[in-house]
Image (tube, rainbow, N blue to C red):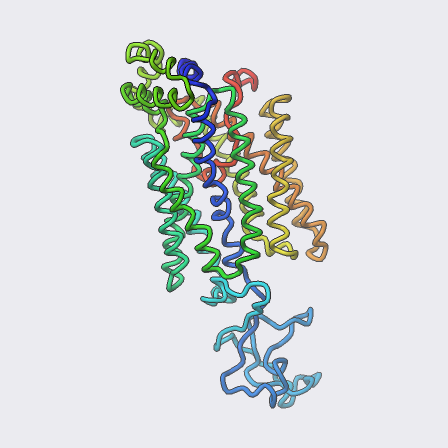
Length: 483
């Protein structure tokens, strides 16, 4: 609260906060694009085996003579006949045209390029026996998210949020562009992993830097703004992917702007709260006075001095001498129980959420349309969640959101694939409930963990979603929730 009073003294929510929050939040639009980019860059178009090089389709009877049909009358994607089949096979399977012997696609595949002219799947033939490599690319990206959250989260506490953000913007731009020009699949996966590392850190430090410069009573509004910016990024991805259907161009388009973010991030002002928690009162004073000048509060800034800061920030200075560790989460019984419960909530929410949003082709409708719908459902979900949390509390909102999401997903699993409208509707409703669940669990995490281990206590798989979540609304949340 002492630091909150200092923020109000130098302008509260002034010109500086409006400018810096806007500039820090802006990259999150493209962060959403990177998280689900492979829905489009790794889309699987309709395909079938390529006939042998010596095949004469006009003489053999067309493509049907070489490609078997499935039960729906569509070409089999992974098999072809060993020899051309003339006419209908005999019922008993005898005769030259009744062998129907098949083999894998030894000469490659032919793709329908009408919707997806170029993807990593078509370029490197990630289909049939190589289909698992497509999932491997996304798994490595998520591995990068895990590693980045661990490594850059530590560095942000040691070096500051601003320096780490500057590095992350540059890393995202370079690794994203290198992925766009990757000569083979291995190189592509390597740079996607590096992108995941930097993007995870951007999501963490964007929220942290913004929250630490905002008065407590405005943090909920900042969190809501961040959530809506992320949703806007989902809309943007659908439009950009539709306009730019070539995967290399799309990868390039969502990566190059990070050079601009890198350039203007040098003008960010480091968190004065981080300076004070690090015991660097001289830099805390300089940062606060600079903010006061930008906000037109020069006189209030001139009143600040080292003695004033020492008197106001006694608690922060005391905590800066304490070396908290993540081991405290397991050593203390109360914290251990809290850590295990929150980890289970994070795992359940994240596992279900990404299971829905990372396989849009499985719904059987336009991938561009479903991307827009998934982005649109976040808007009312976050709006409703905001009011439910404040009126009923975190615990009822958390239970209701997870329960509804689970019901939607379980019912969806038994709905026949032919009923695409019903399946899509349930998936959209479930995704909205999971978005609400993310809001609740982020509030729990931020309010219930002690300050010195709050960042270390957050499960790492939350970091892809942290840029979308709300921040603590009340200092008395623990009493409100009975915890």
